[in-house]
Image 1: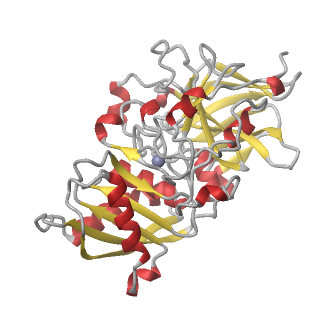
Image 2: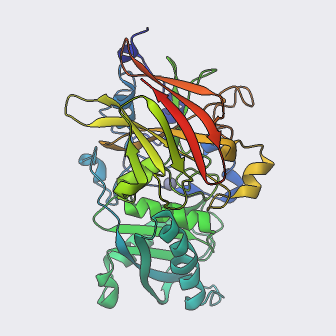
Length: 412
Ligand SMILES: [Zn+2]
């Protein structure tokens, strides 16, 4: 077997799109809806550690070379590499501040409407996605005037909001996570933007936000990075892979649909109770419940595939999404997705929160469009083999998938 320790993974597409240099300290920025169609276009404002190399010999080391910046502008002087994510259990508090531009009429959004949208509707998504272990709470504060007009550029708006946030006082100081919502700014291209995994978080929403945008930004405030896809040419996994930023179409931390966060992301957040996850270290036949709801059997299989010299592990996660959950069925079916006919396999490293990678089980779908992971599921009677080292591997075969459970065999 080929030595997989000598694989060189090319991440040129990622580096081309990521803002190199960290002076902007932009994290988790999402562009306007018209640009959400292609995952490859979305990366904006994330930082690359300037000392990192994209020519390393280990895929996960390469993944570690890409980091998002925490909130402050000097963030990249001390990159937050491998910083663990704190469990997000119980109430998650947000102070929501409404901003209005100079010269604009009083916006139509009422405080109850904003509360319902963010804390209510997206809060319900977080509640379900966390298996009732996390919930959003908080308060919507009064409108404040911002000393700019609605044709201001993003950078000016961000600077002004940073000033407003730094001058926060009174009850707002009690909220370490703050969301600033302002009317749509015509020259600002992103819809939402948030700091990632900071002690405090600052989120900005440009215009009346859709649920996906809010859920995605909330994920950032909890510490999540993006859910990526692994593109390996005509293979599901192999010698020449590109990690495609944002490309997991089934996860709100991707960019396409507001599906629940994937199993790796939930594991980072502490949302997988012991009963929901089964660690697999022996060959056998395993049945998992549909991913979206806790059941009498586990929802996730977690297969250790590598142990690093520091003791941290990489895992394959297997989950079975079903239409009865949060998954946006209509959108997926219209794109000929095979999501509900198979299981999803993600690769992730417990020491790297930015390592969520969906493995594409139909890599040739739609030809050279490597950003398309809409048929990534491993359907019945199909197998996937992942190398453990030079001589060993693990093979996952889907036996059956129903609306309530899926059965796979795992062969070491
Ligand atoms: Zn993002």
